Length: 129
Image 1 (cartoon, rainbow, N blue to C red):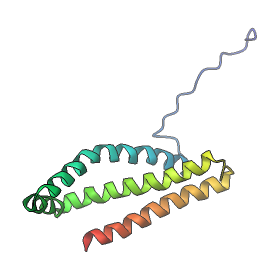
Image 2 (image 1 turned 30 degrees about the vertical axis):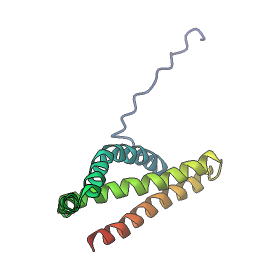
Image 3 (image 1 turned 60 degrees about the vertical axis):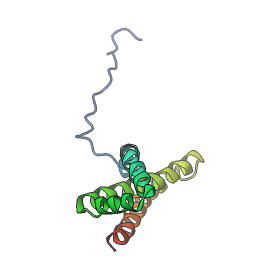
Image 4 (image 1 turned 45 degrees about the horizontal axis):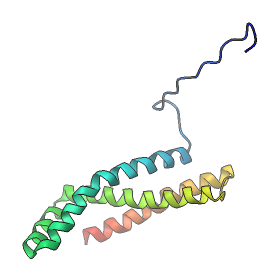
């Protein structure tokens, strides 16, 4: 280091204050959706095991899944799975060096958000039937 030159110190970036671009938001939501899926997995495995055990178990799971709060949680889990899938495809394309230009990256991030929300809306509509 040169004499008299000020030492370069790392800056503290408050993530609650800075405004992330859409690709950054999609990246963070990809991680959040993965965590939601990990937490939902034991409940979903339990529901599958109980429903497959007997007709009474199936009726029990159907009653639990009929509750509006459980339907909302199931919809959030469906969003997490669909968003994680769409964002994972986007990250795979980036690994293949496809869509590295700034504008293309923004468009792909917007497409991930739109596709995951649209697919979740379709699944939510089917869930309410």
